[in-house]
Length: 61
Ligand SMILES: [Zn+2]
Image (cartoon, rainbow, N blue to C red):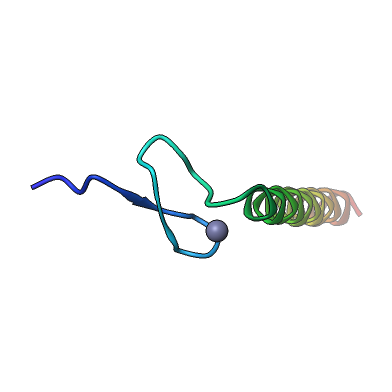
């Protein structure tokens, strides 16, 4: 059995199957969340690279 509706991925309200959000404000919230996730992923990447570089540098000393 296939559900003929989806839920807004931000607030969980029932929406049409070809949509992701119930309203433009939910779309806005989602975009802001994505931006935050992307930024924290970038910070994580920088920390890992910094750790990696410090391990390499300390192995040379
Ligand atoms: Zn919503």
